[in-house]
Image 1: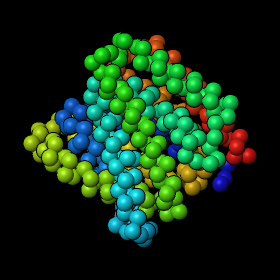
Image 2: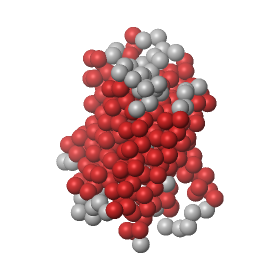
Image 3: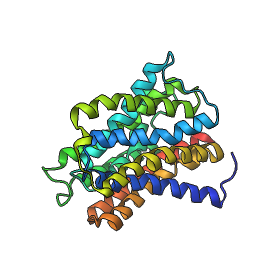
Image 4: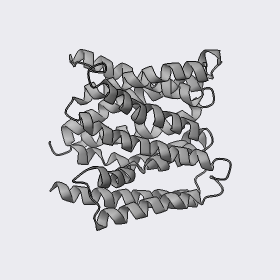
Length: 295
């Protein structure tokens, strides 16, 4: 790994912007499409750049090898379930709240890591960070102006979607010796296979007359926020390492809140800002503990 240069920081900010932009684009996509259709189109278009890269680099895709069940399981938990839950929740919740709720992934992964890994145990700093971060989320749920009895469940489903990402990450450890391109391409294939019958049976999107902005958003979500973002993330990981790449966690909820205001004019209340700060502080302390362990 080399010391980050200006280009590396530019790419890190670009990755955060791409991932943060997914939230308001999901909101726009819900104007015309159901959550299953959004999930399907996202993994379908997202698979294109990843599989093209694998073809270009002559990387074998093992989606249907003896480990197919792991790829299928991870594809469902890491892609199908969260993509559906987020799209379903954002229909009733502001996209800036979704960005904050989804930013709890590092906190949830720390909790699960304590129980399911040998070297990710709690210490005082981690525990403090987790308590601060989740206190911010609890405070966010007290914002009756934005979260009420009509969309409370939707907000919880988004939070559940972030937990699915964490569980999927833990399961990925089972096939961690395989190349990232192969794993990502394989789980995208299985996510697409799983969603095909669901989208046919549940939503029949071919019967919809979608708005042009919704069409643009779902294509963007797949090609850019899923496919291209993964390739960019992989480039940063290879060049600068996990600690540098993980700093994107601080930027996503900030950019998500700003972009939702710019493009959708979504309300930003005082409680939203306080919750955002609390989550970022929590992530900081969790990552501070992890960074100390690396040296």
